[in-house]
Image (cartoon, rainbow, N blue to C red; front, side, top):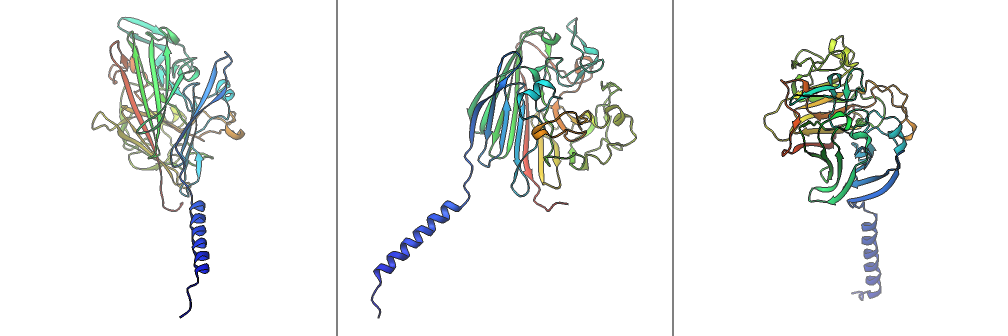
Amino acid sequence: MRPFDHAGARRAAVFLLLAAVACRTSAPSSTVASMTRTPFGTTPAGEAVELITLTNSHGVELRAMTYGAIIVSLKVPDRSGTLGDVVLGYDSLAGYVKSSPYFGAVVGRYANRIAKGKFALDGTTYTLAVNNGPNALHGGLKGFDKVVWQADTAHTAQGNRVTFRYLSRDGEEGYPGTLAASVSYTLTDANEVQIAYEATTDKATPVNLTQHSYFNLAGSGDILGHQLTIHADRFVPVDSTLIPTGTLAPVAGTPFDFTTAHAVGERINASDEQINHGGGYDHTFVLNRPDTGLVLAAVLQEPTSGRRLEVRTTEPGIQFYTGNFLDGTLRGKDGVAYARRTGLCLESHHFPDSPNQPNFPSTILRPGETYRSRTTWTFGVDSSTAR
């Protein structure tokens, strides 16, 4: 029998220990969820703007700024796990201030259009700023997208959260009542962005808030190949100025039938009066709603990257807009020219022109009431190979 080699045993033990350490240090480590606040420039009026960055444990990152409560970027993984920014926007504050078609912004006090910039409430007629042909759009000349909000951050059980607050004074852009509004973005470890709105007022006023991010799940190119499902059997027809006609029309047999998945570009050039009015899709869909809570409103998939977005909301409608007014003159992140239909919007909100449409769900908020609205974006991937 050979004598036991104590020195050799020690060398072997040291080798195994070093190998174990090497394995541990070379293995990928999970990202630590984090939250930071940094300066992001100053408005022409001298107001300081902050950028808040939320990160979850998977490395998903949401960046939002106090100007307009704007989501500046949103990085989510593709099929291979590579993170990519899926929203349009600018690299700096200057682009948003100079010229922005509501990239990533919270719009209000009233999202979408109000006919001829007028509505009557409790016997008084109110006149709003007209900023979209003959109509008022997205809150007016200086809506919620163009003001500086106050921001608070918090670590919550759901995830890292930023809450933006803004006090809209009585008469601002023609709207009655002082409105205290807030919107929060919570980034969860389920790769969800939870959006929650609240508002109170001291005088009856219409309120209709939404998030106006332009999505491109491929990260570049047009959005015509994205596959879209919208859980709506009806939509809101509009006139040539994009004001509702007052009816709710069935989608069956029309280019607006997304009850099963269709490519965005499949019927976008159809010979259809409503398509012609919008220059593509720019319409509110009436969601199939079995209850008053969060319901699945839309599913968007991009075949090449595999990215998938599910939109759930407490709102009665969702506006589907295909970036018809982008024309390549705006240069966004990395100097990219945003051509027509390089981004699409899925804006959860009440119907357009509701203050002038008595048959639509009411958007009037009164003193003593609290406006509450929730929308969730859930990001995932289709694991099948690209088509």
